[in-house]
Image 1 (cartoon, rainbow, N blue to C red):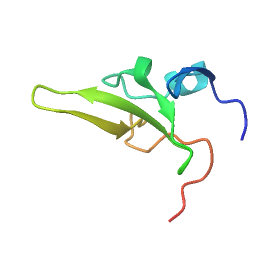
Image 2 (tube, rainbow, N blue to C red):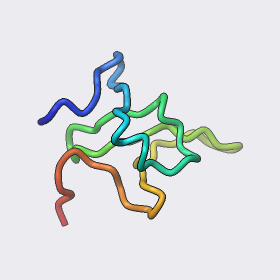
Image 3 (cartoon, helix red, strand yellow):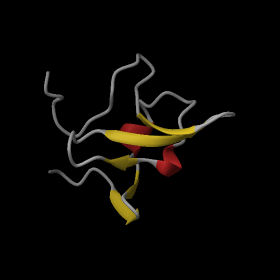
Image 4 (cartoon, rainbow, N blue to C red):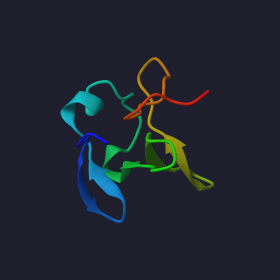
Length: 71
C-alpha cells in the first residue's frame, strides 16, 4: 500500500493534503484512520446521541480510499 499518511498511534493517521483538500468539511480529520479490510479512510463522528465510525467522504459523497473499492 502507498504511504497515504503517517501513523499517529491507535490506527490514526495524519491525513495527507491530497485527502484533506477533497474531504467534505463537516468530518473530523483528526480521528481519521485507514481500515485495513477496505483500504478506506474512516473517522469518528460524535453526535448528540451516539458516537459512530463513518467513512470519510468527498464533497460529492464518494468514499476516500487508498485502493479501488470492491463491488
